[in-house]
Amino acid sequence: MKTTLAILTLDEVEAVPVVLPNIQKQWVDEIIVVDGGSTDGTIEWCRAHDYRVLVQQRPGYGEGMRECIALAQGDVIIEFMGDGNCDPAAIPRLIEKMKEGHDLVIASRNMEGAASLDETRITRLGNWGFTALINVLFRASFTDAMNGYRAYRKDRFLALNADEDGLTFPTQTSIQFAKARFKITDIPCIEPKRIGGVRKAKNFRTGLQLLRMIVKELFRPLPAKVKNL
Image 1 (cartoon, rainbow, N blue to C red):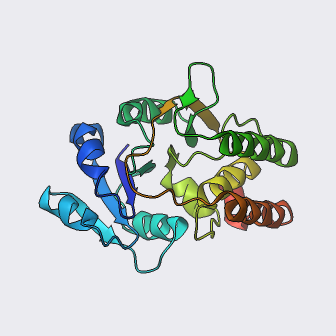
Image 2 (image 1 turned 180 degrees about the horizontal axis):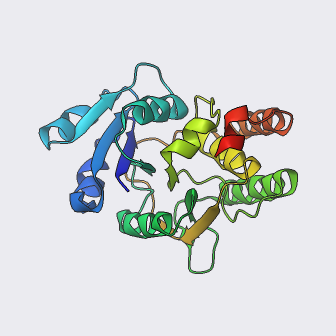
């Protein structure tokens, strides 16, 4: 089982020198920095330290992940934010769960032994509320459907139709894996505070985008090829 670690960045020059050295390269088979168009030196720092950088052709979290997955050699894709919000120590635990036969493993901030050091009261309420709504509408049992820190099988992802371009992409992926009845689990993790930079999610706007996406997925049939897996 080969693994590809996708590190998403957008103007994170303060964070990448702190975060990336804590990722042991032997943990995974491939590392790709997926950059959304940084202008602050993030790309230059990563290339100077021998990281492969994919500069997205189009903007957006989801667009960057699809471009990365199209190039990735791994059977398992690991999404990782380069802003400091992801604890590198959880990478081996995500991989171990994937080796147990799961299709999607989410690093949950809401399990026993987990926490977020970066959430506000509003984002905590939003994450809890959207996760609860998704569990009801899609007969799922997520503890954290929202967190982008996760690992999943590439072939399962490619059988789906995750077409969101922006920050709604990870949640759409959660929903589609649940709709397909793929094998899903989670692990507890601590979400550190972001390091410098600017938070990309805007509470009200991102919330509306999530609601729109959830309604779309509620009435959207799964691709026929899912039935063959």
